[in-house]
Each structure stands twice: as C-alpha cells, then as structure tokens.
Image (cartoon, rainbow over all chains, first blue to last red; front, side, top):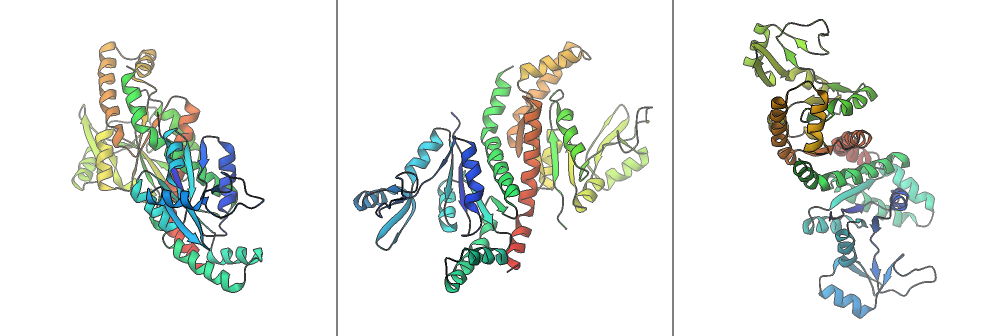
Length: 201
Length: 201
C-alpha cells in the first residue's frame, strides 16, 4: 500500500495558516492534522484529541525518554510536544499528514524523514504582517515588535523549505497548497505507476 | 525579470502527448512550443516556423559546428534537430518553453540545464498502447512490435524524470500537467518572493 505524505507547515503568527489549511482539511478525510500533546489541565473549550491530546506528566516524560516526540518544550511547568506515533500510523495507513511546527522543528523532521515536504507560508510583506498583528489588538507593541523580529528570522529560513506559499490572496494561496499536495501524490506514485504500466503488457 | 521554465516532454508514440499539450498551449501565450528544424523540402501542408523551421544544409551544418542544437540526426539525407537559440530567447523573455524530445535527448538537456523540468507521459499500460497503435492501422505488425519494444525501453527510463504523468484519462492527465507547470512557477519564484516580503517592512 502507498504510504501517505507528511506535510510540515511553518508560518509566522498572522500569516493566515489556519484559513489556508481549513478548506484543505475539510475537503478530504484522508488528511490527518497532527494534534499537539500537552500536560496542562484541559479547559472547558478543550476537546481531547482535537484541541490537544491531554497526557499526564509521567506519561509525557516516559514518551520523551522513548524519543517519542518530534519536538517538545516546557512552558509554565507544562509540557507541549508533537508525538511521532499518530503521525507514523496515519502515514502507514496511506493518509497524508499535516503537521504545524516552527522552523527548527521542521528541519529536524526533514533530517529524520527526508521524504517529508516542508511548506512555508509567507505573509504578503512584513509591513502587512505588522498591520495584521496590530489589528488583532490583543498584544502590546513590545510583544508585536518581538513577534516581528521572530517572523523576519523565520522567513529568512524559508529558502530551505521545499515550497514557499505567499498568502497574498487566500484563494491563490489555497490553490498553491492544493498544487503542492497533488504534486506530492504524483511524485509518491511514480515508481508504482511505471511498474504497473510495464507489467500490463 | 524572472526567467521561464523549460519543460522537456518525452512520451512513446501513442501516449496522447499532443492531446495533453494542446489545451495547455492554447490556454497561455506565455508558453512557447519548441519547433524542430529540418533541411528537408517544405511540403504543401508545411508552415515555416510552425510545422518545422526550414533551413539550408549549409546553415544547418554551420549551426552544428557552433554547438547550436540540443540534438540533431540525419534521416534519408535530411537533417532534423532542436535548435537551442529560440529556446533560450523565450526563457530569457520569461516565457515557459515546452520541448518534445526522446529520452537520451532529455537527459542531455538536463545535464546542460539542471533547472529544466523533465516530464514523461505514460500510456495506461503497454497493452493499451499496443491497442492504440493497432487501431491507427497505419503500420504493419513488425513496425508495431518495434515501437512496442522501444516504448518499453523508454518507459523503464521514466523513473529518472522529474515527473511522470499517466494518460489514463485525458482530463486527469491535463490537470497533472498543469499542476507540474504551476509548481515550477512556485519553485522558480521562491527566492524573489522571500526577498520581497523581507524588504517590504
């Protein structure tokens, strides 16, 4: 059976990543969206396995020691991480997987799985990104400045991604993302297809 | 200015290459279809620059000595070849170029221009390819056998192409070809896009 493709998506906050991914995920039940795990207490709006996978601290640390995370971090005494097992299971089942992660995590995954497809989503410009962050009104200018310098640093690493999609218009960006998915299936199937054609003589 | 992309297309006779390329070429005036050159006499149906570029024997041989062809061959005392200059001119102008050539020619071009995109068009199966060739009724079974063994040889080389498109349904195959064109533009623009985003702060 044909394995699925792992799409690793990075984007600075404010790039419209969610708006691009939503229609892609809704259009197919063969794409699994990788959900982060955490040890923080579930809140009322949380759904286990949807917003997060909720784990005990002991369970999380055991999984760390088994090298079971693509990456993890600890904030405010709670762990957050990206577990490998569900990703591998879906790929083996032939599903594609979308995994959101920042640049360093993306490069680590690519090192471990060179067949993963790295996609970076860009804002139209840094200027527009700042405008979007300011429009949200949820952060003070110091936090926004910090986000902006982090965004510039990440964007400068985008050249090492397999594909760069600019969110300069949502329809175009979604179409670009679909194109990347389609091309991955095309590449993925090449060997099988050639053999089938040759063997059906 | 962004350079165009060179798409090098190979396909055994009977794969429906023309049917796939026609709508692609008609849909855009920024795609140039590379026309072969020949020294044979024009026939009544020929249009210079459309069916072939017609050249004198002296002109053709002068161009050979200048390394002006991607490849050339001599049949029945007439030269046939693929001149480089018009391809390069269109690429420089930012047009994409589609060039049909057999496998050895394709690999030679890739060696000279690693940025060229090699596309192989497959029939659904060797069985179906034979059916199509027989249906044409224009060749005897000996010629068809020869074409079939040549097709099998070429198809076994398809794995070294950048993309393999199976013509198992014309709409799907055209969509695949368009996807390859779109992805090439996306890849081609990456560096420019990143710089534009970073510089517009």
